[in-house]
Image (cartoon, rainbow, N blue to C red; front, side, top):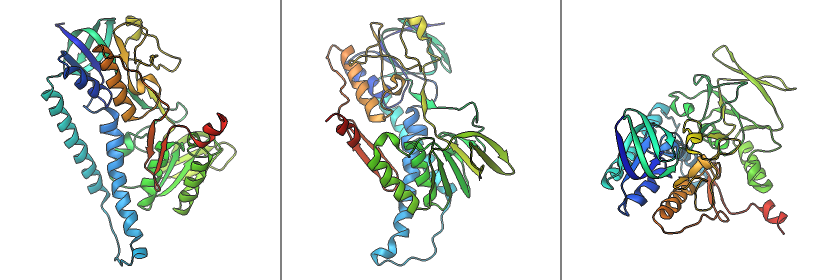
Length: 365
């Protein structure tokens, strides 16, 4: 394979990777950006942007439903979900093209393919582009992917994950969502607005358990008012095809029938394909790459940012980590601080948080 040398090689073109690449390139470094799929990563292609685009449609529908309270009378309201999906795809494609232009304008060399370490300074790329990159510094930004459960693997036709459900062209009449975290709750809010009968199945005592009791109770009340069925302390044992839909098997409860099931039980880091052991990079029990506050791994010259580090699955956190990593490569010492991280959950109503939850603050006195 042909060898090519760069000052900085970034693996993963999501909101952490491309920000780091641009930061390094604007300081005059030669930069390579390796991406195995589409530019923009999860956030742009199957995460933040497409979901929020669809949620914007839901917000319009919600406002129409509330029109009479503002003295506005409307006739029967209809919608075309296929057109909504087409609009979503168009928004994603437009931003993806803009990102490609931005990277080219900053003279960043893009390689399409999977990256794997051969040594701490050598990276093999296999895909549309096949070569070996020699890197003075490497930034790992490979993100995360939906967590698949062995007891009910996704078939992406009736049992969906957060990626495949974005590709449906017709709304189901009913949807069972396994998992009441932020992903499950956003999809529940979206589909309920369009008349889908939504049931959330959560193993813990409440939805959004990480957000604190007050937020969980407030959203539960709002969801129930919207007709969303929330079942907590429930254990899903399996999901089977039943006719044209699915049957969700529940422990000590009657099975739940639905047209579609969405598995939203979390995400896992995407690090298994990187060949970390060949570079000597240490990872945790779940594959998360271990870093310090400078985003440095245990191997000099190798950094990791974003969701692959297993902390804060938020695009803006990944972007800032990218700036921190690139700055430290450039000799500008920066540290990450996580004491006041903002976050938003795009349900109806929306939820915004910064820093500790009320319960965490109370525990710390």
